[in-house]
Length: 348
Image (tube, rainbow, N blue to C red; front, side, top):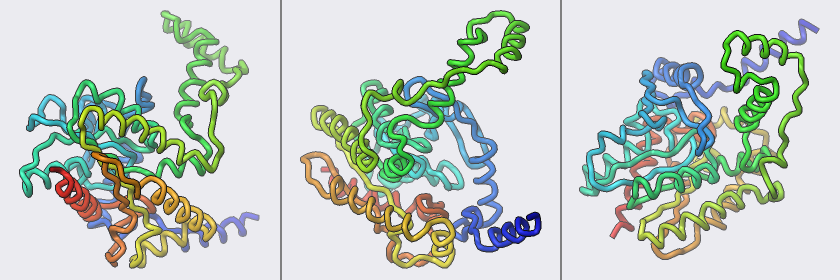
């Protein structure tokens, strides 16, 4: 059995493709630094309104987090009079960028300023794993305070991922935090003032069975599995689009790119998909993205703009993706330039 395990391990090492070895990165050293910051150094905390955010004031080698827990410039040092929001998941956040300057919020702000004298402070409210639900919450919690005149969403992937995992609005983080709090409350350590008593209650409580909180606590009603992504997007659109029209805020919705739709894939990109996705899963993702694209990104609403980015890398034969959804610096530059040009085209 041990021999069989070693053989299997060798086979997996030979044929599995590690995204951090992608030639989309400028060097292996840069890739290693980004991976180390993302996987080992970046600290993320539960957030009372948004679900989670990065711990404030982190100054890592490839990632800078401001006083609000955002991968964005300090709100105390904004350079323009008008604000813009950028919302989305990890792609909008800049997962894989070598520093903040290559994240979409920074790139779009600089492109509009330098090339078209369109001046907005792009405040990134995006974060890793955000679906349309977290995007909506971030929008609602901040729109009246920061009063953006332009709002951009780059999303879609995490809505589909939620459907695949059948998780809807609840995530593992919500469940872990609430169950831990429930346990701490029942054994008496949350309200205990004495440090020694906390230790004692913690030891005793470790032998107690605490009933976990289940999904009915989180959700009054849950859509069918094959409707989760569409429901998440619809809920976001219904509020955001109505609000932006009422307040005369320009709003752009972009369906984020996905490696499955890149026609001229590099050798690494081909091997990555072959290594990580079965034909059945790839076919499902392609069908789902096309369904989302057709239903939500080809509609016309006055003052609200929709654009699919699924094919923006289709003629690029170089590696731009280092996994299915994430880009490196050159990829983010092209993505941000494309978005900026769409903004300019529809700005007046």
